[in-house]
Length: 416
Ligand code: PLP
Image (cartoon, rainbow, N blue to C red; front, side, top):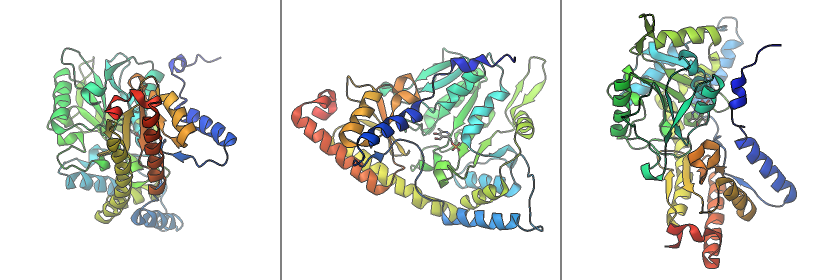
């Protein structure tokens, strides 16, 4: 019998989306006539843009002809795709070397697999609440993590504690689930802190395309010194509707060189390259062709139309919350809107309450860590019609409750 990786026993049950599906299924079984609106999961609803779709078809045709057929490709990604990514950064004023770009099947794999590069005795800082993959992938390999607290006092943007040492720091900006987005000064402080500690920042920029203020950094490399201390992950999932097509990329600058216990220099770029060449056989040719099309000027223009559609949905949600006097986070540079549940309701109770009363499904904050237990996430990835209808129901519910001074009586801002 093999000895198993018993670290898996330490994982918290990952029941968030299955539990949501289970509760919604039970409700619809009992109430088949009700129209349930889902503003819960982070999947998109807009189809691929024209450019990407055409590139996929063209790629498929090339694969069907002996002259243009492609077998295994470079593990790091095709030159054209890497160059298209470099140009994408360049347009927002950030210089990246193509040798730092590794194309992949998505940011989830890369943010999970990056633990391969590090030993297991590091001080690892992970924000709470945040995308659960960071914690789980560290727990799986036996790493201990320390949490950095995001809360209402710091607008869900925790800053470094200069008295605490760290080796690895996860940052997700704009954040899933809170939608909070660091400004350049705040990211600079994290970079300075990492440089002082000789730490590595693992920066997840999966939602960078939602940043609409040119003053806010969409990449950590917009901050001076970041190439000496940061790896960046990005994804086409939300930017270009690639959740089902699958493509992402990771930037590992060659400047990231550290000294091993033997005294030898170790380059994270070389290590990631070795890791990918050993365990990954490259992203499919047709998908990379579509990705390169997304990063063309026309592709970006077309993707912007979809992003604008989601932004409008986010506006419908945030306008409703603002009108009702409910404080929220995100929704501006992010597809996610995050707000506190009424007092005495934890996030699952609130989930059930909204499902029963108005048939609107959101995501309980408890799924994103301890600090999410009393918060709730709505996404702007639904259709406009559903989002508007959901918010109409929400508004009616609160206005009725206001008259009844019922469940929401503890939403102080709402009462004032
Ligand atoms: N990073 C964050 C913060 C996410 O929220 C998600 C998906 O929801 C991902 C990464 C996964 O991206 P991908 O679809 O490219 O694997």
